[in-house]
Image 1 (cartoon, each protein chain N blue to C red):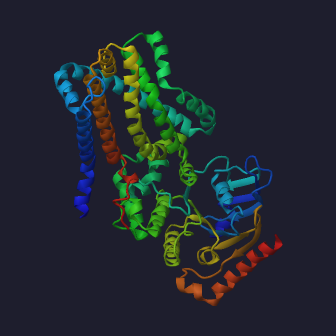
Image 2 (cartoon, one colour):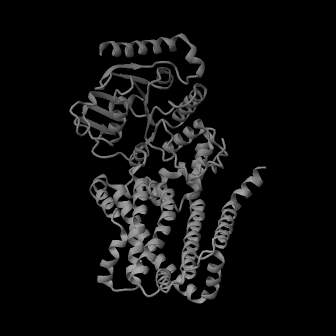
Image 3 (cartoon, chains in turn purple, cyan):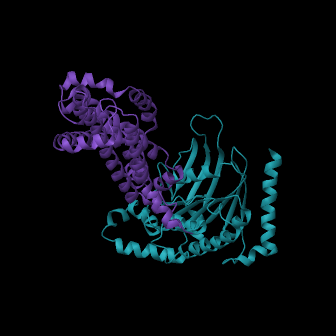
Length: 258
Length: 266
């Protein structure tokens, strides 16, 4: 029973997607909706196949732009997180600023970035970076700041330096927080890239959707949406797998024994 | 142990401590000497500054007034020869039991520099220590796979693996059930008998203090002062049976009355 139940669970997302697609298709047929307004899944699939070449090109562009922004975001996020998390003084001085920065919509930065760097890849990478580093900072800082004081006493009574405490306990302990934040950050990075591509680029999925929309090719716009969704979901799953691999000890509910 | 009396291992002379930003003192006028290899227990009501005492003895906190000598030298910064264990085992969940026990050797000199080279020898040492506390065969399990009592055993091994001269225990058995607690008393008794490190045991369990210690200090409610010092002259090695003897219960009673007076006095 348990086995068949868990198999059902792993198939559930696919089943639900299939149901949604079927209903969508039926609605389009039943109400005879024009594909200029709301294309049916079949039309979307057709344009996916028809424009497979250009879509793949733009998708690739979007993908590596996102990964570049994400990589910078991880590097900066971890660094800031370690700094913020290991000093109470820095925590209290820097944290409010970070929160203020994070509540500014990142699309508002795109025009500024365009003035500085021109239209193209650089603003997209930077937007992806700006939007995705914050959750990493917060999570790494939390992981470090919530270290048990007793554990720190044990280590300090052994003559451990701050660096020792950080590398032996602080960082390993914040790994689960870090991986959890990567899952959020990678999806946000795609948002950043696409937002920037829509307004300030000549390639990438964002640009593709923008130009397809302005020439009323709605099935192609939806195809773009679909491709972004698939890429973001695939990356999310990748990091979820990585998280389980690296920090199995933190998710021990199922394996616990005594 | 005659020479011990001459140069105390730990020497507190009128030590006062107020935590930062607080006017009231946490401990007042602590004066006591602990001989090398002595087993000292500190008992008192909760919040009496017993844990503060431990922080002072390791140099984690510097006294506001007074002086602390360890091994004849003024204590000016954190000691590097102490092992500590607390009520919570504080083991690292991403390390196996063996790797948890090895942790101090990765930090304390001279083991730190030799760790990579001598790893096999250190692993042997840790395994032998685990075996003496009854954790043989648990080396590769993770802490969360062990029971509370087993985790606490591992925690004590971690405190002892670098062969510290001083072991500080802050209510290490407080969270355990009565049977496991008594079992671990014996584990600690045997480890101490074999290695003769200096022990400072902070506890609120008077039977534990009398069973294990050479000397018991009674502390008052906050601000903590030392109210009484009692030498426990029960013969060693002590067996659990002794806890049912009259000599034992008399001493526990006497300490209990001291604590009772602490209450009334406040």
